[in-house]
Image 1 (cartoon, rainbow, N blue to C red):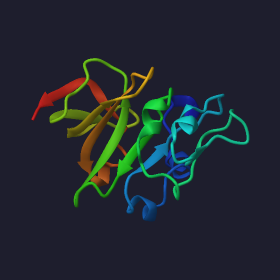
Image 2 (cartoon, rainbow, N blue to C red):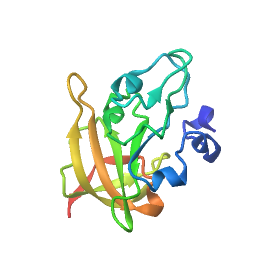
Image 3 (tube, one colour):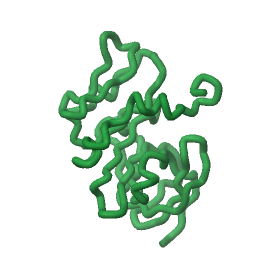
Image 4 (cartoon, rainbow, N blue to C red):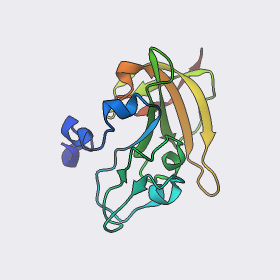
Length: 166
């Protein structure tokens, strides 16, 4: 379905997801990048060499989860807004999900934001626990939400202007 509607299938996602065991160890980047196009800013941004785009720049990124520490440098670097960081160890019943965001206004820490699925479906109101802007020439914001663990692999955006004070 990815070709028809831009939404990856469960099969597409399984190819890029870290193992459950790796997710239990702490934050991990997930590159939901499925197009073979000349692009490698994520690999250049990773200070740990965890992301490769090989054998040539037209391939999709591959993350080495033995090297990835979930530092989030790749999130803002991705021009396709296709990299997320999920941390299932955030709290006992909550995960954190870091999303790229390029709209105004930007939500503030402590606000609630309407989380959306890959298909744009509203999944609920979630606390904004961190707001950080990319470095250098990259102005992409990284918004981190606290979400129930069972939604950590589903929340992939926030509704523009869909924020409110807690």
